[in-house]
Length: 371
Image (cartoon, rainbow, N blue to C red; front, side, top):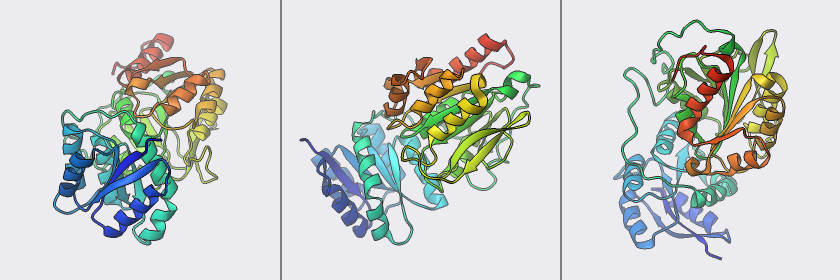
């Protein structure tokens, strides 16, 4: 059996040792080298040609993001980021995903040895996924956020991003809801969909597999880039047109009815399909509560979370789109949804938003402005 060859890049000797040990315990992978900084890593990558690298976010001599940016332009390869559970760590990690990192592991701020050992299964699972992911060369740096927008998140980001006034909304935007499920590669895929929605779009409800501490920064980053408002969902709040609501990391998100309105329900609970938040939970509520007024979108991700519930959505009358294999980082979740008979359309990522808006216009008339 050919093993996945991994290079570990981290300025902490303890972390390098722990990650090396975790990787080498697996029968299907081996750590072929470890480097204390990007300069050493560069030479190691040239000499060893690994399949995957794990990369610390903050390191001496060269910032991890600078190194990642150069790597993805000159020698693109699968990268799993190792982040800290801090606001700064969350913002930098989201930037790393934007630059092309496949996924990240959030290491604890204290108790690093025990913490990483507890994360061993997550770390090795993400290395396996990264080894099979579709890698794309970073051609140019991602576009800067609009002037005045705090694209990296943080306090005040919501207030800092002005929006053009939306036209008077008809019943279309009030009644329709868009549901998005995503995992590995999904932070950027979801962004691609949201930035192409008009300000009077129907409300969007999103479950992206992400741990606690990251979704608030993720929502703030998107809010600085999109025409619609984007926020982390809060339990009991009314779901409004022109807004997107992201499941908080570590909590399930679903939709309920309250009179004539839809509201967000944010709850703790057991993981579903090994995930919390789970796409299954969100999509099941879409089928049960929204029915034919729902639009489902399944984006890139590993596994099968949400596939069965997406079929239930379609049986209840929703219109569903799955991202195609060519544009997915990992085709697992869309493939499973397609195999379950849940998809009405299978589309490249860059066509999903426009096709969705066209579908709304064709079915219900030109009540929405074009993207």
